[in-house]
Image 1 (cartoon, rainbow, N blue to C red):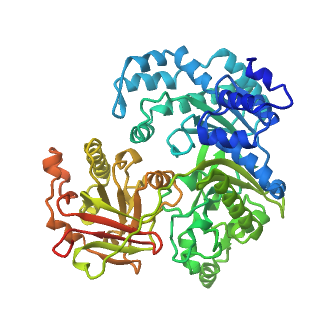
Image 2: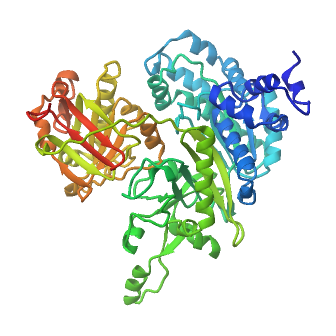
Image 3: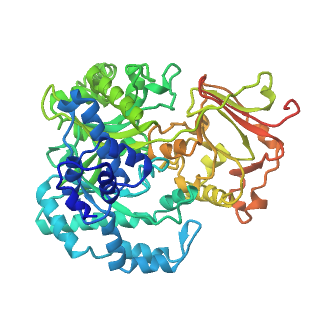
Length: 625
């Protein structure tokens, strides 16, 4: 058989030739392969190969992006006028292998077994990955790519063969690194090479290794391709950013309002770079949009809309040559009038109050209301997400950016598309007349499907004692949760975690700063309100951690101090043995804060009714059959 690159010169390919080219260039994963073979032509493969640097396949993230763009072009040609053209390059998996061999990483990896989530010599392997030499032939191709982009900012993103595929999303597990791409050619190349090293080294991230371990992927050879994309946006003085960015889901399991239709999908949008749309951002609130009721807002008053809005904006700062977070007030005056109308609203009530004190100024806040009001945009996003779900035959999520360089025009840049797996709902029955045995009964909370799940252990944090614990030592509590998590890695037990305030926050005053790797064994996680200390749940819909929990079929909900919580009785947990010290000796200082209750003999259960948006945790008791 001739070389597959020679085949690409043919006008058409036979089905056998198409499959061979797909497997050599893009993927051999069965579901994605099926989509590519159905819709891609020889010309499409040639276009991909023309943008490939080095050998090997282009990886999961790149495949997802290209498949989604192809489907949109074929099935929704009316959107063409609003779609930014594709402008990406792909560094193949063979380059990663070359890099590993050249820098003596492959031999180190082969010489030491991977045990649980850590390499025995992880530090040395990470050091070599972070400081390795790029193969010379690849450096020459990178220079040509930089000539194509000129001085436009770019981003280097992971595109592992396991990433963004059916069953494994790897949301946020590997690095994405922005390159300002300013200065001399040598400076730009050095910045790009440093970014490539960082992404390659991120295969050693604790959360990435834990993710692979949970999905029994540790024995699979990690083959890392890279996706290089132009950053969407425009220059505003020393800053570069899109007017807005975000993520969208074709299925909305995040029922923050009672009448939302989960099958209509949702958006999560921010002003500026989309980094704030997919990470937890303390004190910041992205705009959530249910695509069936886009105008419905959880915040009904002007004061609340302002209070629960975006305060800071992520931008590329050319002067400081890095990704920076700026206060919204520093960005507002840089935006032209038509862009302000798209993403900002005015708090006229606050303006009136200032005027009473003879202070006359416009008070803006970021809520992307103008975009939400654009029926064409909302309709397009709804239709696009539903079409992609139909062709993928499962729910999908996407990442996107919006640019608006001229008045009355806007462009959408689709940056990523991945399938999201979901299990089927079960028939559930929530009993009545058993309030004495209910730990909690909450509504309008997050779930993907109806199910009943037995609970063996509950970890509960005392909110007052956590509040009183020294700020500098609050991370010790997170590490203890991680230790509990590790203890149950090899035991088939069902765990629930109840924490004050937010989970996964970077600000301990708002909640508990755990990483995904420290809560990966839990089957249910609840953020609990405690107003005496100012702890307020704020479910991070659409963030990377949230997507991890949804993908793993973990219940993630809020126990608020409002009408959505009918019942919360943590004192009932004292019926059960507290076993933290017995299971994990040596944590005496934290046993007043962290309680580990053994419910394994009492048939406690978590009952989720997705239709009602209701979650009930029933503890064992005399009335339970």
